[in-house]
Amino acid sequence: MLQTSIWRALTTFSWTINAVSSADCTREGLLATAKSYVDAQTAGKVSGLKLATANFTYQQNNKVSDINKGLLSTAYKIDLSRSTADTVACASYTMWISSSGSKPYVVGTQIRHANNDTATISLIDTVAATTGDLFFNATKTLGYIKTEDWSNINSTGSRPSRELLKKVGDGYLDMWTDSKAADSIPWGTDCERVEGSSYTNPCGKSLPHGGSTKANGNRRYVIDEVIGSVDVLCEFTSLGPWPDSHEIRVIDGKVKYVHTITVMKM
Image (cartoon, rainbow, N blue to C red; front, side):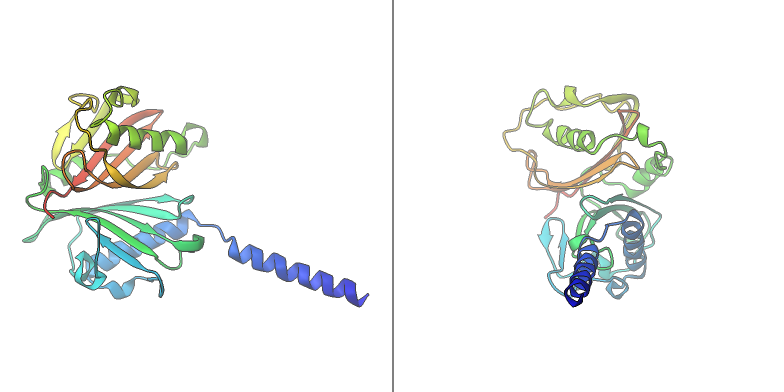
């Protein structure tokens, strides 16, 4: 009888431990942390972020940096921000634009969480473009992007798969080295492409078809099936050692929006 009671107690304890260790990474938790990041950037105060006490990394323009000396240490008036969530990778992507002041910015940031725990941040990974970077004009970029529809795809049957979104993201970055990559992407007929502040419609016009021998590497993904988007931070090695963000949205199986942030100064 005593052995049975002990076995039941141990079983219950083991189940409890396993339940805690396999906690779900929730969309709500990811987006709440993304909002805290935007709030911290608006205030210019890192103290508003719940950073992991061990093994936290801050990376800005593909270089590991001191967060207290980075972009987050300065307050910016943010004209527009938008976040997506990847519950599989336990990561979020936030794009924000500050078009006023002496130094405007267009920024893409991936935030990652270890052990599916959205209560603390293990990595902040930022690509930040400003005056002098590729096609940079924050006011023009803001004008294009603020008119876009990035609402949730509520019908689960209409959402693109994770596999398709990653394939589209990789296909786009492969266009500079693979002559067939551009034709493998399902372009929409009314697709808008905003590269810095350079606008193209439809997206499938004027695309590269290979030519470079250097692949765009160091790719980091945030994939959100609910929004139908993929963001890839990378090094745009095919043209130069440039920190870069490529974000793509797919609607009804076709590419609808493409955004790029490319930093040319190092």
